[in-house]
Amino acid sequence: MMKPSSKKDASAMQHVSDAPVSLGANEPMRWLVKKDFTKLSSAARAEAFPVLDDFSVKLSTYARRIRRAKRNARSELDVANWARANFANLNFHIPDYLDKVPRIDIHRISQQEFIERFERPALPVVLTGVTDNWKARENWTPQKLLERFHNEKFKIGEDDDEKTVHIQFSHFMHYCVTPGEADKDDSPLYIFDPNFGDRSRNNTALEIRKKAKASNSENVEKTKYRTREPSDDTDGAADESRKKTKVLENNEAETKIGQTKVEGDTLPLRDRNVSAFPESRPTREMLNDYEPPIFFRDDLFQYTGSKRPPHRWIVIGPKRSGTGIHVDPLGTSAWNTLLSGHKRWALFPPSSPKHLISFRGLPDHEASTWFALVYPRLHDPTTTNESGQTLASRLGIVDIIQRPGETVFVPGGWHHVVVNLDFAVGVTQNFCSVASWESVWLRTRDSRPRMAKRLLEKFEQFSKLSNGDTLNSRQQMFGALVTKARELTFVPKLPPSSSDSSDSSSSSSSSDSETEGASQDDTASESSDANGRCMCRRCKIRRKRKDGTLGVPSTACQMHNTAMS
Image (cartoon, rainbow, N blue to C red):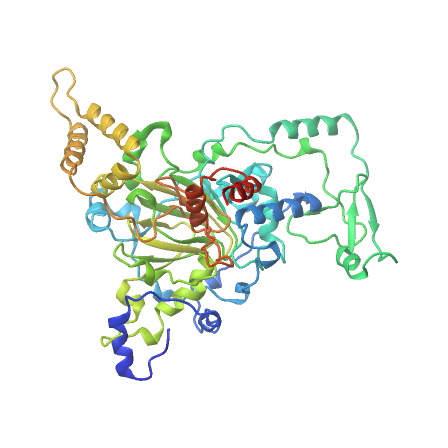
């Protein structure tokens, strides 16, 4: 985009603002977020880093699994290039005055008033007081989560063949809090797990019990230490990088979570008697720690049965992780509650054109990339019109700084992008309410016809009279929903959303948006290849489906393409 040479040119820009915007090869760095804010938000001032005790990881295993997770979650990006844009040097905080979204105490507003003021007109709002009675306030601190789920595996994304990429929680926490790991990555790994509420068995319980039994039958042997010195036949620089390591008898180096090395020769290693530590618990227990806000409990999609698409996610991630620009699937609305940390949101009304809120030529579709390259351009003075409005103002952008204990309500159809300002733990859920039934039904009818049929059959059953009694209010409600669905029979198929997705997670996440109707994330997108093809997850899946190689291992895909040619 060229800067106008005069005020006349600047005012004329409003007439050409609908043209697609592209970033030149040498341009992006001009638009990076400035670091010289004179007034940072309270989130910036309150930024904290989790401190974890009493747990350690094997360094060799940790390094191998982190490399594998990065390679699988973003195959187009070399592991060494996760910090290529130096976003760690940027400040993603914004001044408090930019957040103009009202805060409403959930205890001081009735459900009907909430529906009339926010849900029916589809306006974002921040609710407070939702977590007042949640056990998660105490149980979801980084330390408590590590104690309860240290050996559990959480979803951080999907590979090119749509297979889930998992990571052990203790390894993920070590990645988050260790200097030189997540703190240097442009868009770090991010837990965005839609299945945490379905796992009723811990996935490593048998292994833990075996270790506990072995450790109880014999005394814990003393830890041996040795210091590696550069040898004549090895590279001195490589040896020096290892420095001092504490080594067990089996030569397995181990360090406490959050430490990069062992300092000194007598640092005690934690007692390796596994039975002395709490057994890793199944993640389904997390459902007992919270309950949906009272305004969102009447979820119509709960009647779809066991085949309901993913609709709830546990979200845990370090600074700069997040979910790229997307719209929640099937027109559903969402609530997102933050237990710790701070998040920055940018939301756009459903009418916002995709080419104006997500430029072409971006290196990827990560949240940090969007806030570093796209957000500043939307506010650039060169986009100001005669009324003094920037492109962001004309699009109706909504900025939010979400603080611990706050719940963001995202109406259906709204585009949104979220980035963590520090280590954050939260939970989010999509839902379909009576107020949004019409738009959700139209999208479900066309995208998930079998699910729509099951849903309508259920509502018809609920609305029928029983024993000659008069219809109660709930039966009348279901009857009205069925009638509205029948009235919409001849309404044509709605056009796809400009940034529809089934998942909303970052490079590491999987679900908040990507496949048809399911909750997966196409925000885990990537850069273009040498031929200019988009390498985001959704585009790769589309090409594989077209070639007939979807679900085929990558090596087999190459053989298939060779045979076809």
